[in-house]
Image (cartoon, rainbow, N blue to C red):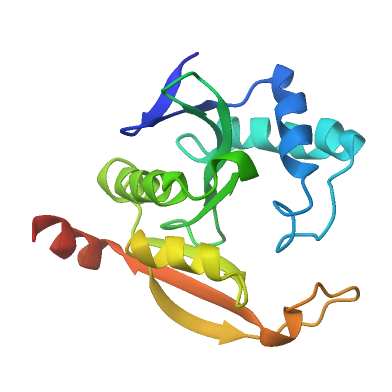
Length: 185
């Protein structure tokens, strides 16, 4: 397993073609998918769309993508963390999806902080953003603990809205200058 990023308790690596089952298991938990799609991602969608797109990003945008996270203590698959390209070349979107079995252990904050540091310290990014549903208080706490700051609330129209959609979507962000000032403090 080639390490892409290491934290105190996690090892992140690139996904491989043989990792479909990990993604199927992760996306089959309704609580994990609650604020995303509200339902499990079908196996064929993971095998034919999700995983191929993850693998393609590695080639198209070196240094960016979605990375499998494993615990150092035992190697258990914890979920994934990602630095996704955006329409703006110097801006990336940070994200994460963790198995419910590892919730509440601080992995989301630990992994997100490490992604932010990698984005600014190694990848030359100018701004890191993150988005979620306004009612997703758990993810909002992680974003704030990782140093991102609330930027805006907005409302979108969805054909089949999830419960809580009526409260809107939120964006958090952090720019390089603010991160550098904080890392020197």
